[in-house]
Image (cartoon, rainbow, N blue to C red; front, top):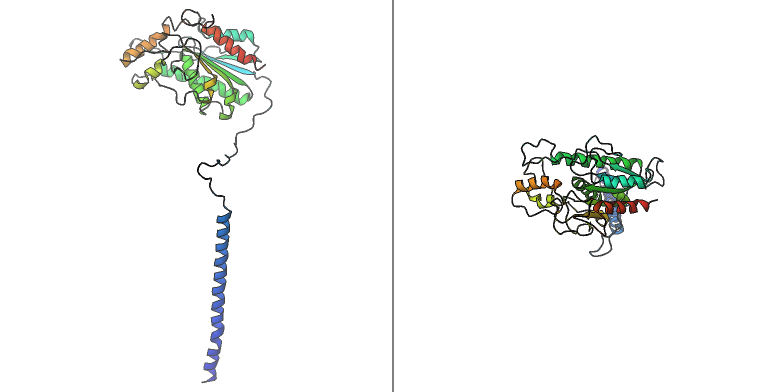
Length: 331
């Protein structure tokens, strides 16, 4: 064998040794990666067993309520929404004069006399308060849908602005007839986390008072005094939906009053077709009756004891005393 051939053969073991070292190094790296994966898996917390204690919910990102608020804020906002034909879009919310016989004026005026504005800002929502009778082709006033939407929007705007500027102010919400529908809808939204108050401020609502609520459901709130079974006209007619243009019967409130159920009080006199509606046979005829029910003697006389009274008090007297008690507790 020549010296050249011997030299080539003598180099082969070193090359083989280099390859072996690379293989060993690769295996070592792979083993290290596997160990890291196992450690991560073993240290990961196991999911809770079915039926076991729930994991802690994430901390709320809602801002903490401040300890103070501007000096021009009242302790309580007493928000009042009048019934059909008892308000106007241009009325003065602190001195309403659109209808001197407005039922809710008997409540709001008494609250203004009892409390200074620093204690209670008594605010009557100005809105068109109309209801076009679809059974009367000569009726050209604004539709129920348009009126109700304006009333709700304006009431929500007042609540939202108050909440932003006066984070410690509390609320008493009251309404009659169409106004009761509006107030009830807002209370339902608040109690179910749909606004206009932030969900963490639901506790600021001291109470909700409704007289002749068109979306009333017996037993779904505190029914005050002699309270008939049955439902309001909008619930009774809910099946017709938007069959009649401009007059949508919205049925029962989704979620009821939610967290505000125990703080909501409803007054309904037996025979009031707005809050105790008859069985529907003809939708068009029934909605015409609904429109005319606003002038029905039972519906129009809650300031008397003729059709509803509790311990000698009229509905407006009861609501004034109830609201006054809630406000007085804050002073």
